[in-house]
Image 1 (cartoon, helix red, strand yellow):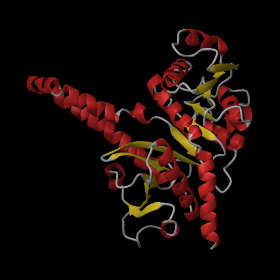
Image 2 (cartoon, helix red, strand yellow; image 1 turned 30 degrees about the vertical axis):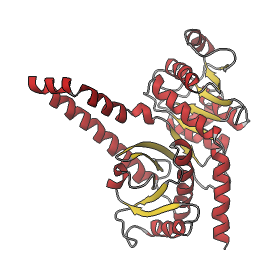
Image 3 (spheres, helix red, strand yellow; image 1 turned 135 degrees about the vertical axis):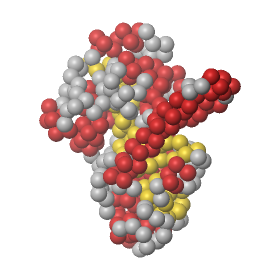
Image 4 (cartoon, helix red, strand yellow; image 1 turned 45 degrees about the vertical axis):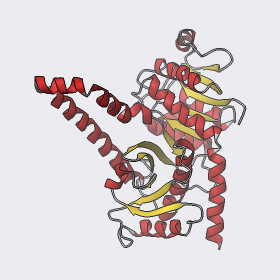
Length: 343
């Protein structure tokens, strides 16, 4: 794709918006000059930030003014009813009407999902959207879905998640032939509920188009046993929050250990470069950008408390998905899946 990648940004969503959003856009332009931004939000607040930026100019952005925004504590139903003129909804509608390839917001997750589903609608062949993101493992990086959009899933939902997750891993993680696994309480074929076993049977029949590795367990997630972890939103969200909590606890214990005595403080000084590498490897900003897969458009959710570095990474996820034709690939591979079912 040689033309500009057009990304709509909800400039009023997030703890430090619009500062974090505009600075993130400035950093993203430095990394990927082929991006054009629709900056949706309060023009009076956005303009001074643009003037202070290094890379944003009249050739790579346009401001869509609105003073209305979705509050962090708004219920999705409230946001849907009264949010048509908010920065979040206007940014999403730019994707719906074809003015932008994707939208990125650090705002209210529930409202973003509800508005995106209403405005963009579902991709043909997908019954439910799924939240997907990526994170570090012992072998590199992997992605997992669903992370909370669907508490209960049937076999068809899980198979569709597997197809979308496999394409997501190829585009965002750059993997040529990513492996896929279903999260279960054991790796044996007879383990798990009926929906899981039925989904596994279908995925094994897709061996010509997908590298399905069968069932995996919870400790396989961080081990990197597979590149794509597929599960329902209940289990996925619990696993994600448990991993985040473990990382925070580990960091807390490590910091306390190095500060306990004069000798450990000397040890910290001696291994400072190694700890810096560990911090960079585990930096949550590096993995910022959860994607609402299954919609007929690209919608990326940034963490609300991130900084410009993290937001720029979320923009990069949306841009890559547009640049490398994520939606087209999903449609094509769903067609293969349907052909398999018809045989």
